[in-house]
Picture 1 (cartoon, rainbow, N blue to C red):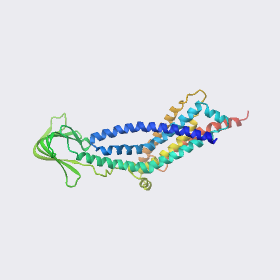
Picture 2: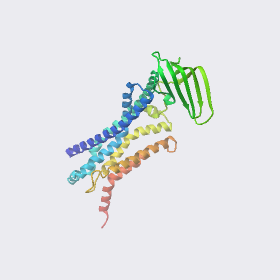
Picture 3: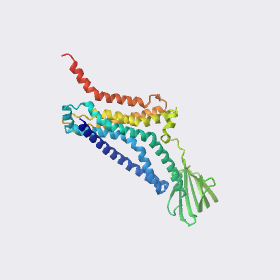
Picture 4: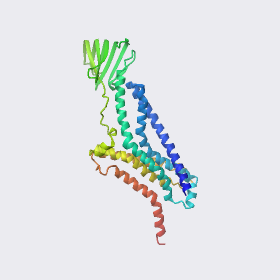
Length: 361
């Protein structure tokens, strides 16, 4: 039996790794496109782009593991049922409970890995990514403006263009557009210079001999101001972004907090490994095929099961944050419901056969 269980473990592990790597590759390609687009828009230095790729990948791995486990188990066991290997093994006395042994031997280490990623590595990666983005944005703003090219500042709220630039940084025939809501401000000047303020938190663009047009496009009311010298401040993001994203907070901070938003984040981090265990329990009976069924006949059921599970968990997380659901229960209600479903799928058929056999004739 141990030889058979080792064989089953290898089949499940191979399918799990294959599915997870494919999912990770798809998500990574999408992430690469998003990071490159943001880096091009905000003028990130080249050195930080690859680190942003790695930090984003660390945060996404733990999310893919439960789905990878579910599909890997269903695909592996579906192939074994389709080729009648498991049917022959069960005919020789390999019972259904023994099938859970190789599955658990894979699922438990993966769940522990996901727990470590969620509780320790992913929050640190999120905080590092946020600080790196702010530092990259500051470094990008400090780069000289190239002549003949539009340059976005302040997250795209300010656009600067210069027809020509001197070696000392002086700009000529400058165009600047700034927007705040519906109001648009357009400034043109013959010359301009850039400098950093004394506190190092603001970039000052000093314009000479120009005009400023301010108003709402489509309306006849515009204010026109002519000036000999004017300064436009461009705020730089702080090196430590100081955002209120809960995914950047360390687990001890979440553990000590009683706020509903932080408690829901803590349950979400713990809940992803639990989701992997519960889905593995559901996957073993779900993968069982009837005669003449295709090996992929149960894959769509696995996808629907994960979609319902993940969406219910996400909805419960939002309800916890809004105070609709008791934080003491929260996501555990969803995990408990699907755990009951898994136990029913695993033990239900055997109990039903036993009950039918015990009925009087």
